[in-house]
Image (cartoon, rainbow, N blue to C red; front, side, top):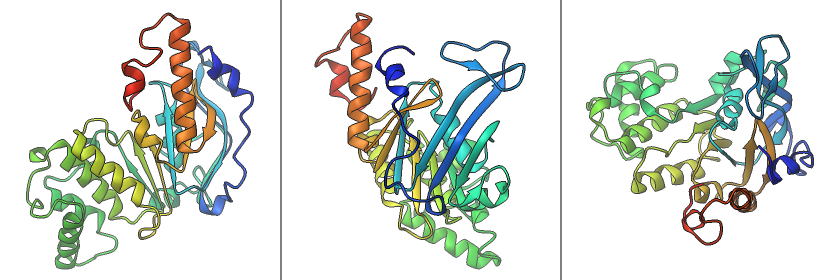
Length: 290
């Protein structure tokens, strides 16, 4: 990707002043992700081994802010970056530490402390009914079934799903499924919650509900930090910190409002150089989506 995004990359410094230590946040040191591939595509380079392509990195990051947004174009590496945080993806080189734990050497412990919410809630809802899915997450902390069922009912009520415990997950609305997926993850009381475009399929009312929930989580229970990807720039602007990703690199790193403004300006400038439409005050600048 040409333009100011590429030009800005070399000025990025690893971490930001005041980001804090690794025991209470994230630390990525020269982390890279390589995948099988015959030849690198546009903006990609060869991986560290023959027959691989580098899709992310090297990434250097230290972050302890309560809420961290990750934005960028489709295919830029956002999802790959956040999947490093719970060991769904392991670095081909470099290291990733999450709240003091190494994701490669201590994968089980990392996953026990990290909750991951996928874009499509049906990917992670595995039980037939809403109540059973919550109960599944409570098995370790509530050994006896009556106690576990009562706790599940309380969680459903807390997340606006009261009275829906016996309903099939396929009979819930998209927003209800997303809230159920969040509730199931939060039932494990994670230290870190990672969410991949958690509001993409939701209507406005449920989008606002889920966004409010995510932004309010740090400081609740064990939760210390929430990291999420999104194309909703209004949502990203509310984060304490925001990372802009392009071609597998962090190309801008700032507060939510500052990073969103930088990204919006860069996208519109590139559209202008290509002769694209709406580079001034058109519809792209009038919405929260880019």
